[in-house]
Image 1 (cartoon, one colour):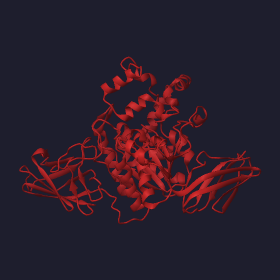
Image 2: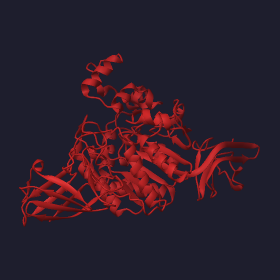
Image 3: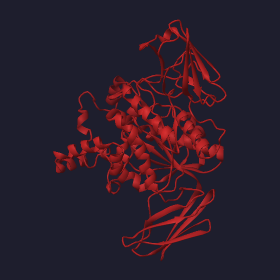
Length: 526
């Protein structure tokens, strides 16, 4: 019987201007033809009934129909668009739904746009789980950007798509493939985890299996409702975590829901590392990523790293580039890979922001050394005690700027963050010179959430002389052109000086270039 893979449905968006694969199942050996825009591609199902055919390339279009035929079987898919398609991957800050976005109420009033579409692959942790519960009731189909659908869009991906659609007047499709709290190794094949220096994850997983009672594990997995969340927005506890609240507010709201969090054991529903746990190495690569690959896409937008910071930040510098290579190998092309540098944080539950300094350094290393990548900097939109910053518009916008410059050839678009290049020290003054200033740097009194930093203060700045940190509250900063001049009576010339910008867990950078992009983390010595 003729069937297509889950992604191929009514209302889908297809990638324009390059050959794209279409695949599915049919009777073993049966011929299959796929037609769209007057072009037909043919193939035959293999001995297991699997088929795949390269189609196109197709031109930009706002309404098409695809016909798939095998013998007497015919599938007609309608309301198809051809434009730009991006995969949105990562953990909770990419998964983060528009429901929780700070600007959701206003955006809902204006979001009606038939030319932005979104497909979210269900969060399933092992092959076959998708058929064992109603995972397709809320996921696994194409949505349009409409008021009653908007809350289920990835906020970062929505704002990214909105910018591209508005600028280029083309259909934009997003394929969501992400899961909160997951490390990079979950999204990679075993050989690439090992190649990327992630052997410690494989060793820890092997150790966890040694004394695991598989029958008891299976029974507990089946009985744990956290493993069967077929609707992410129907989870009241998840709602509380994503909306953001203090432990006291959490307790109060749990009581309002009829649950006394003080008497419950959080470990009761805590998933256990094992062969079906979503955080295990390689698991989601098999159960989710390989189910959407190699759907035709222009590239990837990626937002992840906090979980690795809480586990093994020391290997992310090599693991993350290996993950990018593994995705490119899976698609068999050098996909454009745009990613978000994780936000500043002090503390959230068991997550400690100081662990993320190394992750940000690793991400900058990837941006500087891995071809066809770009890094969106968000040093200004963190929340001190919430790992899920609620304003995602700046994140999506900065990813879109990267795409406009690096992917769509708009070389005049400033997409890179100000980067501290050198420092000059004089008596009573340090001059910081930046790349990527555009038409000039500027300091703001407040950052996007409204937190006050101070217009004569460079947030996140530390100055050390002879190894001792100077008192920044006694200094003033002013931006001029591509420089920031910091003045203070404590500053001495002709002594070893180190300037650190955004090198702690928590900070707020309020220095921007003319594109409104904040300065990225840096460390420079004289």
